[in-house]
Every structure is written in C-alpha cells, then in structure tokens.
Image 1 (cartoon, rainbow, N blue to C red):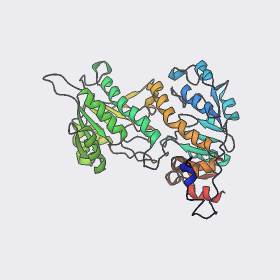
Image 2 (cartoon, helix red, strand yellow):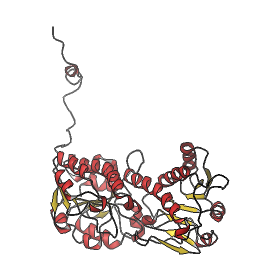
Image 3 (spheres, one colour):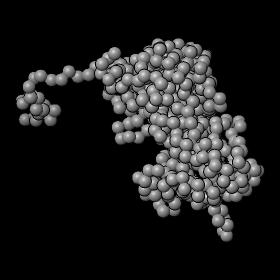
Image 4 (cartoon, one colour):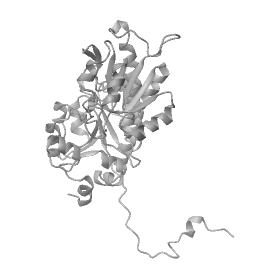
Length: 406
C-alpha cells in the first residue's frame, strides 16, 4: 500500500481550527534600479558590479547604468550591457527613470536636484559632511533614504560599513608605510625593521573593524602595534583574535599622550556608529609627536577623530602640521576601486533584492531589520535621532511610521 507523504500528516487537518492568519502579500515588485556614475571628486568606485547587475536582472528587475559609471573600477559599459543592464546616456536619465537609486557617495547638490518624489535612495550619508539642506530636500520629496552607516542587522553588525572598514584598515597601514619613507619626507624608517634594528611603533586608536584590520596588516609588516580604545570588551576581543603580539590599553588622555610621543604611525579609527566620530587626539598631543611621523585619520567621512585632521583628496592627499604628515582622504577605498566595488556589491545587492521581493517599500522595511535600521528619511519625516540632534530637525520613530501607514 502506498504510504501518504509526510506533508499530508500535518496537524492542521486534524487538530488546529480552521481560522488562520492571513499571509502577507509576497507578490513582490519589479524595480527599476539606477546606478549613476559617481559625481564626487575622485570617486572611482561604482555601487554595483556587472555580476550584481546580472543577479538583479535575473530576479526580474531593470537596471539602468549611466554610461562610463564603471570606468574607474575597470568595468566597461560592454560588461554591464552583457550582464543585462541598459546603458543610460546621462545622470538625468538615470534619476528620471529609476524607482531606486544605488550609489557609493551621497548625492551632490546637483544630483539632489534630480531626485524625484517617493524614490528610494541607498548610499553613504557621510555624517561629517551631511547638510540640513540635503535632508530637507529628501524629506520634501518623500524620498526613502537608506544610509550605509545606519544599516545594522539583527546581530548588531553593520555589514556595508564592515566591508569598507576592512579595506580601510588594511590600506591605512600601506599608506602610512609609504609616507614614512624618505622620498615622502617621512622619518625614513621601515614598519617592520630588520635584524638589529627595532620595528616602528604603530598606534591604533579604536579596536573596531578598521582598528582590527589595521592591526592585522601592521603585524604582517612586523611593526610593534599598540591598540587603544575606551571599550574594554573590544580590547579583549582584538587580543583574542590577534594574540598577545599586540599591546592594548584604555584610551585615556594619559595613555594616548604617552603612546603618541613614541609613535611612528597613528591610525585614527575611533568611531560611534551612526554619529560623528569623537575627537580623541588634541592638537597639543600632535605637537608633541616626532617630526616626520604619519597620521592616517580613517574617520574623515565621519568628521575625523584627530583634532588636526582635515579632509584631503587623492590628488593632494597629505599636509604637514607640527612636522607630522597627515593623510585625510575620506573615500580611501576608492583607491582599491575594483575590490571595493565587488565588496559593496556582495552586501548591497541582497538588500535590493529584499526590497524587490516585498509588495512595497513599507513592507520591506517592516520585514527586514537591516533595512529598517538603515532608513534615515521616510514618508516626509526624519527618522534618526542623531541627525535630528545635529541639525535641529524634528524626527519620528521609523517603526511608528511603518505601522501607522502615514
């Protein structure tokens, strides 16, 4: 006798009542995803690689890629076209015909003027440079704005930020090693030293992702590494992952001052998620550092964590103050544009697919905690208390806005 399948032995037909919860509408939506060429100075990354475009197209979405968008990362228009993208001649065409815009940097003033009503925008916000005018523009248009800095999953991780910070941590040490060289008017020392000559001292301020990857890379060079943070748990974690080859200390004024006096390299990696970076190094501390030493402030897109830092560019990346070389390029991963684009695609495309799988943006935000946490403007309201405090703009709780259907 043929046995019934296990699926036929469910409890519903025998025990449970016939009343059931109405399932959510999961019909999904077809998105028109716009990928404009980055307009910010010297930004070489692009938000989505051709492989990501192929994934979006395979899931039933249209993708408009601005002509030349991938050139800085060595992706040709032909590669995007082969992946299924439609090549658009101008940014205006991309913004006018897309329901969702994905980009690396925040929109410029000109790009903000191209945004249209009820569009979805996913990009970095760069808290150190965000303007109230931009926020008010997105609020007036009813744009749904999601910032890379805010997208936080249920496990507390910041997936997009983490990917970029891994790159930044490694690059910071490579950059510092170059500027320590005599040809760059640095101290003329190697990070790792050689037999009979001690290694350089690398001081890392912050035990987060940037700090961890900077420490990993510096240890690989053979440097003596000191990591300071005001979170004892983070210091314990970095010791656990990297071993006792590093020295850790609490980021008190006394410890920071003493560490900087003998530092050859200082990596500024102190951040507060979703907020401006705290200033932990004063100008007086910098003035006591050794001539020709190097500071790399990796937090410039969040305002910087060293008092003497200021934003620089890839074409003019450093300046000297008190004899110390300062590097302050906000978009450091742009110099590894292809690697950074692949990393961003790996994390960003699944979020876009989640929006497409939902019946509406409202449902997508309700169902996915990462998207919900990432939203900073929604239905003509600012939804982040940190931004409200910075600019004096009223805010509303995102969950109340979603639930109320305002």
